[in-house]
Image 1 (cartoon, one colour):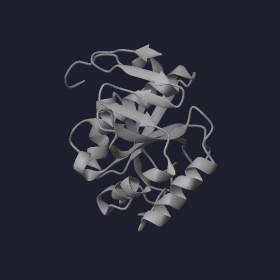
Image 2: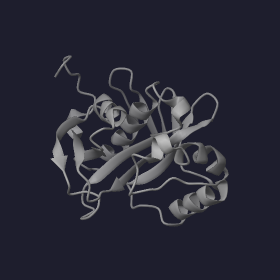
Image 3: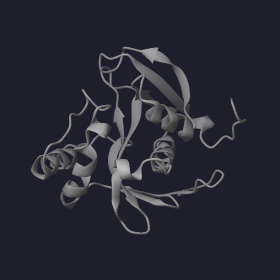
Length: 193
């Protein structure tokens, strides 16, 4: 399936999602060293706790990836390695997972190697998985961001999400909540709105 909105082309083929610059594909055990550069970096993982702590070794990362592969979430939820379309280099990960405690709301989350920050890859990956989720019949997708995580908040709004408030409902933390509804995906917005 191909979708376009502006320059945001998305091609969904089974469990792989393609954009002009990225390929989102299932994780493999061979991704552990590259994944460690993301999930072993304090600049990334400080925003993930308590959902995920910093990983300290390739073996530990391989165990985490193995657990992701052994117990995959129910679609449309999922976890994807974010790779550069031209080189195949692992840039990070993107996930759509049920939010605790009720697990009825779906959250999009992104984690990139700091060397890939500032290039729009997280927003591009988040936008692509939003297409995947909405095509499955889901009507809304959330992102939860720690109040001081300005980079995370900018990424959520770059995807097209709107800030809807703060809550302590998820993860027992005060979090900013961003929401994207199916009908809002790829709708142009006026600057400042």
